[in-house]
Image 1 (cartoon, one colour):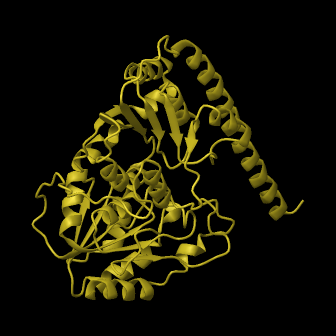
Image 2 (cartoon, one colour):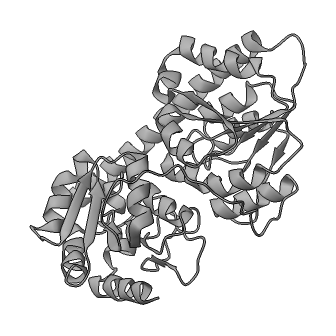
Image 3 (cartoon, rainbow, N blue to C red):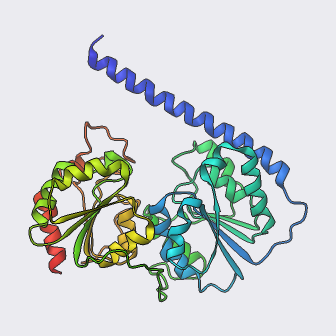
Length: 380
C-alpha cells in the first residue's frame, strides 16, 4: 500500500473517530438533559415579565449581539432583561453599559460538574422567565439545555439546525423551542436584525441609542495603526512573514501598535523585528484594548473577536478574513470605512476544515494588496 493511500486512510479514520466521539458526547448530554428536565421541572407555572438572552460563546459572538441588545433596551414588553454569559466576559459587557442584569457562570465547570450544573439551572428556574432566547450564534447541547431547562413560557432560537449536533438529536431539542428565526441569510449579524424584527423592531437597522462606554485612559499614544496579527486559531492567521513586511512599510510614516496574548508574544516579536516605530502590548484587559482602539486611526485584524470589537466601536477596519466562515460572521457593516480581504475560492464556508495543505483563501492575499488597502482607508 502506497504512503499517500495510507495517509488518506489515516485521515479518514481520524475524521470518523472524531465524529463518533462527538455523537457519543451528544447522546450522553441528551441523557443528562432528560434526567435534569424530570428533576427540575417546577410544580407551579408562575411567570414574571422578564426575558433572558443566553450566549454561551466567545468574545466575537457576544459583540455581534451588542447592537441588538442596545436596540432591545427600548422594548417595553418586559420589565426585567437579563443576559447569561461565561464569567470571563462579564468585564467586556460591563464596558458597554447595557441596561440588563448580567448573570455569569463558569462554562468549564458547568460542562464537567453535575452539581454545579444543577445549581446554575435552579437559579435560572427560580427567576421564572417569560421568554428565554438562545442567542448563541451556534447551538450546542449545553446552550440548548440552559435555554430549555429555564422552563420559560417561550423559548426562541436563532436557527433550527446545528453544526455540533446530528439532525436527529437537534430535532429532539427543537421540540422544546417555541420559535426559530431561521433567516434566509446565514450571516449572524443579519439574523440578529431578523430577531429584532420579531420583537417589533426594524429588520434592516437597529435603534442606535446614545452609547456611553465605560472608558479609561490607558495610553498616551494617538493616531496610530493598531494591528492584531494573531487569532486564537493559528490556521486562520495571515502569514507572519507577510505581517512583518506590512508593518515595516506602514511604520515608515506612521506609528504602529501591535497587540496579542502572552502565548502569541514570540510571533509578535518576530513580526516587529526590532522596529523602533512599533510598540507592543501583551495581555491587555478589555478596558485597555478599547482605549487603544478608540485612539487608533486604523485597525488591522483577522477573523477574530478584536475585528468584531473594532467594528462595534465604529473604527476604520481592515480585516483579513479568508473563507472558512465567510458570509457567516464576516463581512457585515460594509462601507467606505471597512474592508474585508479574502482570496475567492469555491470551497468557502468550510468552517476551517480545509481540504488543502494551506488556507489559500488567506495565504494568497498579497502584502501589496493589504498595504494599498490600508493607505486608501487612512486617506479616507
